[in-house]
Length: 138
Image 1: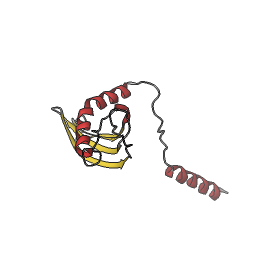
Image 2 (image 1 turned 135 degrees about the vertical axis):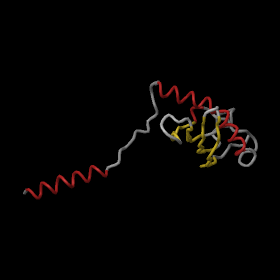
Image 3 (image 1 turned 30 degrees about the horizontal axis):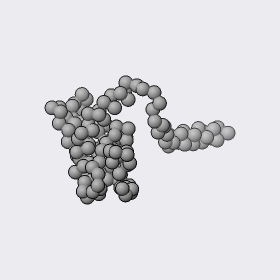
Image 4 (image 1 turned 90 degrees about the vertical axis):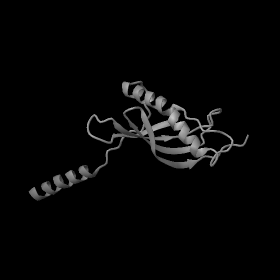
């Protein structure tokens, strides 16, 4: 009986230790300090993102329109410091759905990683085009 109890406890421990933590992917429904800071960052980076997307999309992918970025079509994937604690060499990765700017029709989906460092330097270090959406003819 004692053996069965030990086997049960060990198996319970192993099962719970291998379970994955499920993170809610629900969109925020209330304002917060973190959300405001994230939105400010998106607004400040929008000119850099639009310039890099225009260089990529026009005219290779879309010839009729230049891509525009709307802050609500940017999803923050990851942020990290590239150096020690309180170092000001940061990386930020987004998934972005650029639009046509007029009717807000999404043109595609891209993952972009920027390096942000002291001196207001913003540099694109990785751009992966994930998908091109069909743009309706005029």
